[in-house]
Image (cartoon, rainbow, N blue to C red; front, side, top):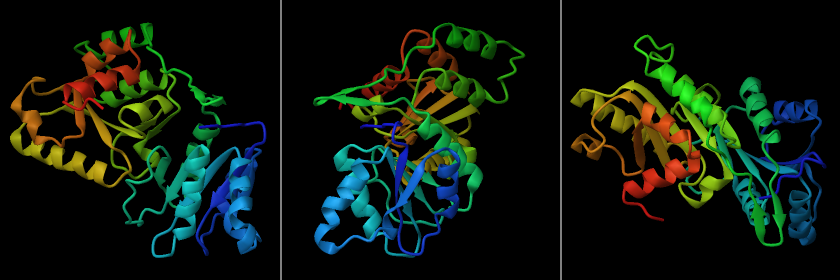
Length: 299
């Protein structure tokens, strides 16, 4: 993928009738020029050539999917963006029911186009993400990194009897992952996946894909609660374009327990202290790859 912030242009693909005014204003406030595809006057004969040129010449691509309307032009233009290596951000209305599993590798958010706070948060993360350049056919990727002392300090704090993280272990996880160099980290406050957070990193494409959902629990116990949690995580995966979910917890069943067989196939799990311990010397992608391999999924 190529993300060139020098031109600072965004191509917006939206169905007829979609109001992208707030989105365009957010982009303009950040010095980005928004070009809305449905407003372009392009003849049928020159459509493909001009469309590809418009998308390729933009810094990134935003697709807007709206419930109850024909989104075929958006899907087509998303395909063009993916084929040309453009970095893509997809906004879908909360009531959008179509299967979104096909939108792999894109930053996908169920966000209403009038939710300015959420749009601002996501746009800020995307435009500040590391630039990725192509060198011939090779992609130079910024490697997300182990976090060393940060993980060590978080681990020491979270294992204290009176730890400030005890009631909210997700805050320790967010601090750890946010320090590791991932492209985008979004908390559930800003999107409608249900999971505590979602992570996008280009290196994840070769293992679990993007985004990786992460759910953090204080305690996992009781057969009824475990069954409910397993069903809940399954619904999170089903309602997003994520392929995998990482479940982290302070207290729970032994890692080899049969209890874990109740969980969906694409849910990885690990205690938070062990996760932080590994994070001292290994990056997030390596940790996820080893968990995936341990679950029996090699590719």
